[in-house]
Amino acid sequence: MAKIGLATTWLDGCSGCHMSLLDIDELLIDLAGKVDLLFSPLVDRKTFPDHADVTLVEGAVSSENDVKNILTIRERSGILVSFGDCAITANVPAMRNRFPVDDVLRRGYLETADSFQSEPTAIPSKNVEASFSGIPHLCRMARPIHEFVPVDIVLPGCPPPPAAILYLVSELLAGRIPDMKNRTRFGA
Amino acid sequence: MSNQQPKKLRTDLNPSRLLTFKINDQDVSAREDESILAIARQNDITIPTLCHLDGLSERGACRICIVEIKGSVKLLPACVTLPRQDMEVITHSERVICYRKKILELIFTERNHVCSVCVSNGHCELQNLAVELGVSHVRYNYLYPRHGVDASHSRFSVDHNRCVLCLRCVRVCDEIEGAHTWDLMGRGITSRVITDLNQPWGTSETCTGCGKCVQVCPTGALSEKGKSVAEMIKRRQFLPYLQMMRGRHEEPWQK
Image (cartoon, rainbow over all chains, first blue to last red; front, side, top):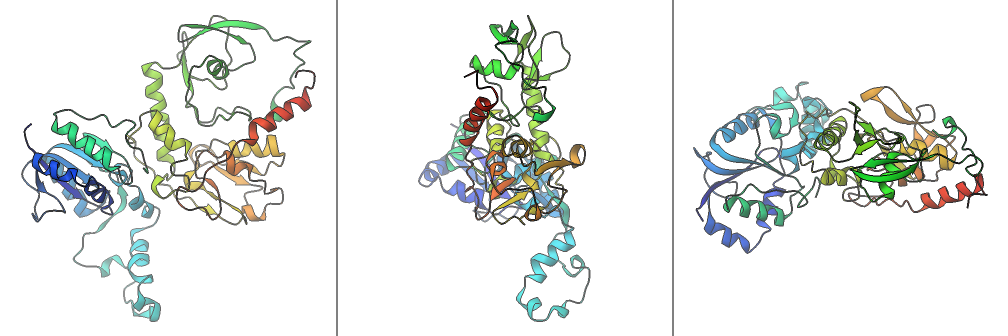
């Protein structure tokens, strides 16, 4: 069985899908012998490799940076897997879609901050987004990956069960495209 | 709704005509007033449904139960289509399966079904239907509409983000409870279930607080207060019982 070059990454997600991947426990040791983990939040490499055979992408496309990244990932990946509900439906990150970006940032970073509670007049700018610098702009809405690039396999679940992740990787290692039917569901 | 249907005739004096037709090449017999869905179920042929619920009138709202009928260009909903002599019904052609998936996907796009944080996660008919029909992702763009939650009732709440407009709540409230608190406003994609004259549920004068609407709701749109994620399990045992008692009351000579 040839080793496959595996990459995993997250966009707008909570890392829960990666935790579920780690939840295959001791089987990780077997897996480690069969894959080259080229890029992942779990390893040190900072830039996406030129080519990965399989890439698991967790999370929704939510910022301008996510859009840029998912295009690069698609270009450099053989099989792209939408890994978990956020990647497939935008799920929890999409709960902000009903509100303007500015309101979301104000709520998330200002109104709920301790300093704002004590002196609410301390915020100079009315345009909250303009007062954030050095971080990627949020898109108007968080959206699923497959609305931006073609996806080869979808693995639903919040998070996908460890057994389903293991099955997916095992099938890919055996050179088959896995059929995920009845192994997982939305919100699992 | 029930008051729009013609009053049932006494079947002992006015026997329904019996007819025979085919479902998936299998010969079946039916009374002329039974739906294709009912006949299919009597013959152990499974047709997926969403808005249908035993004990309530048929609505034909969700179109998940569409079937192909030889000679007809249109796909017809099995729950509100009556059979005809020698009709040939196909329940699982490639075309039907393809459209069922599309319909289900469109239902997902129209509201905000965030399964992972929903009170009905794991006990939801919409979620189960996605598994049953093999819908692992939605090919249409999500609309992410802005919908509210009405928690003004002391014991229940309605989250329009999870509503699929099956109108089971409207039907059970009208037909079984007899209160007709629930109704529908708006058209097409902007439709919404309302209580009384589109006022907060807690201020409804007609609502008896019986909770039948909550129990029949297929998703987490209607739930009991105090339930957290995945805790809302619906209890529907009362429906066949009520249907049976009501049937006896109306047609005591039948049973």
